[in-house]
Amino acid sequence: MFEAKELQTSLTYTFNLYAMNEIFLSPASDSLVIKIGVVPSKPGLPQYIVQEYESGSITITWAAPTSTGGWPILSYLIWTDNGDGIWLSSPITVLAS
Image (cartoon, rainbow, N blue to C red):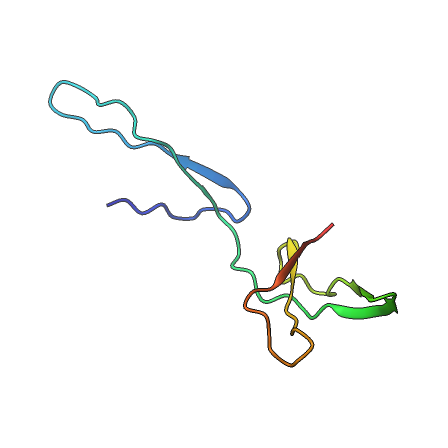
């Protein structure tokens, strides 16, 4: 067991593990790459801006949350029902731009 201490947030550390006997050193293991970061908090709520209905389609536009929780927003999940109050089993995923 090894414990690395006093690592700095936002830096990426790479570790390679070797075994050593009385005479020889083993080849290196696969590298273990770890980025030290702060555990993000939940992002704030996105805010609806516009909902437009035209010819059987709906366009929804929203503003990104003011708080990202410390990490960039990657995508938005939109849960919807089928119009009869039955929620679909999986969300629509929209990648953040």
